[in-house]
Image (cartoon, rainbow, N blue to C red; front, top):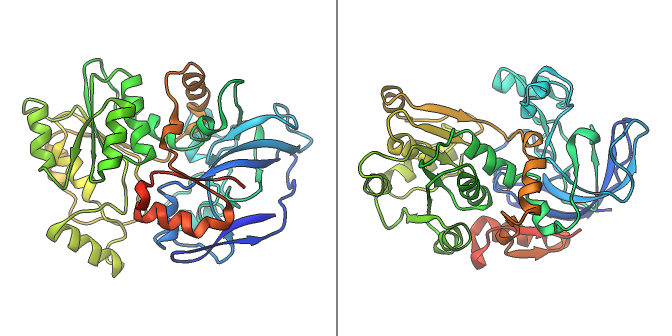
Length: 389
């Protein structure tokens, strides 16, 4: 089969690899119909996630059709159209039973490696380095899905492939971000980053009862998307002082909740941006936490900071004094999508949300390097590239 593989920083190639096969009786083989490039894939592309090996198949957001199942798979049959959660869960361990699927104890075969870095291990993730299990990713014609009854969800009739695709990762991540905010009727929620996850967080905040949502980014086309497709108020942080603007919008109080949907490669101008860039390049600081700093400073006293932008290691100059003295609540993590995907598919089926508006480019796997470069540079107003294997 054809697959898009990682060969080094800023180097992905479409090559021919072996087809996947059933390795465990709980496995399923999925023919990938659509696979999207996620913002966290750029952290692999840029070389900030350790343990990648040349030839690794990348990609983790996908939907497709069941073509084979192991003998112990109960809920799926050949021909079923499914969306698969990007996080791999067993469904039976302590964490899965508590709905904390991204902390699954059984789905990461390289738990020892991740534990040595983070102290404890977490769940496996498709196509996301050997720290997270070394699983083959979704930028391929076919993919093996472990614990298929737990990780694959049937797509309702009438829900288009384009819309269902984002129930794999972007929509549950955005919904998780909003759910973490404990939104009350009348709340104001600010979201940094208007990529697909940030846009889905904006949508989700409205679904959960926010009165106003504020989108923060520097790309006019993304801010326009947030305004036109979501109904958000917008702030371009290259044109305004975001913290002062948020005070003005909220009558001096600050947002009730702030969502960081950017993570480790945040952009900033001036000396702060230069400081983070130099330290990250020299590996003296693993992440660029500019958004995290802004969100801590902007959030109202007693508010909530929800972090779904990916961070990989050590941060510098975090204003913990402000966070502690303002009594902020921090909630964060990889999305436990299994908790949300059925609900999100219902929203899509009911016409309340159509996530497909984030798709701006469609390509074959053979144009994978071009797709990743477009996505990285935001050229041609690129928000999401979708591959059709």
